[in-house]
Image 1 (cartoon, rainbow, N blue to C red):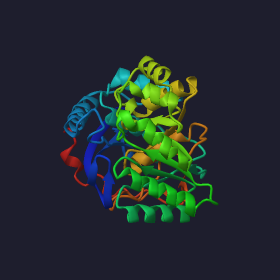
Image 2 (cartoon, one colour):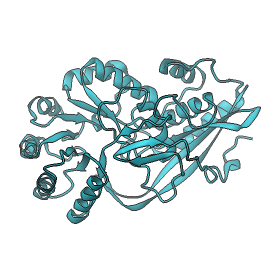
Image 3 (cartoon, rainbow, N blue to C red):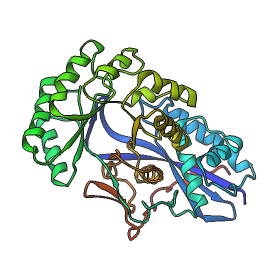
Image 4 (cartoon, rainbow, N blue to C red):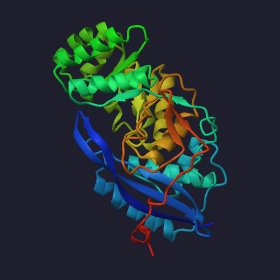
Length: 373
């Protein structure tokens, strides 16, 4: 049956002062793609296109322009779902040969909508043990803020059962950041808390190694992106750092398998952090994981502040792999107008509660404005 597509722009509003190394955020713009068969519009797949300004290669205008063009193309075609989507290669082939999608965030949305519709339009993209109730361990993210606010967040996360916390560094006075880490180690020395750090490229190359040596006193699991991406000193830093280094922003713009392989062979990080909405969608993430495992590099997935729709897609995708490390998927409760869903965070893990329902009544309130008629 011919496929039909529409999309809707939605502004997600933070329920707190969301401070990042790139400034404060009060809202987050996403586009939601709806895909259905012409003869059965009540059964549809959903996907979320969630570019991050300042990180995504595509602008917000680029995203909407491509979605509008894609909608016209799909709605003028007679293409139908493929008979098989057993592998990521099947999905990649279908999109590349039938539609073509340039931007990473849109790629994520289209892949999700296709997989959702293929499996019956019930928000089940992959039939794994996650949707049957098996939880995914996650880290507890500590948002940037004043010293007291950050210490309060740490106490709450550990009280809630988190044994892996992630803190941003580089945005405050370095000595104060060390004070926070010392607080954690002194207060929770019996609790075996794993600490991850994320510098977002904030350290200067000339003093990065010095700071890493000081931070190593606090038994750090890993630090993401200590210096800005593209700096050749990253190779030396990975070789000499007393703290395992994880690449994050360094992965942006690396699109081909050969380029991905060359980066990991050259820099030799301990880990990579993959955000599907920024790194080529689900298929691009699949490629990164294959290359990382080939190069003996660890990895975990992180959401990029998607709503529950995008978070659900990432979590289900993650559950198709053996998961050995806590994932960065604890962002489902940060919005006042997120979509109620079966996703729950309990006991430092993300789970899918089949007894809860998706509430999507407000997702497409003005759908007719985006339909190509």
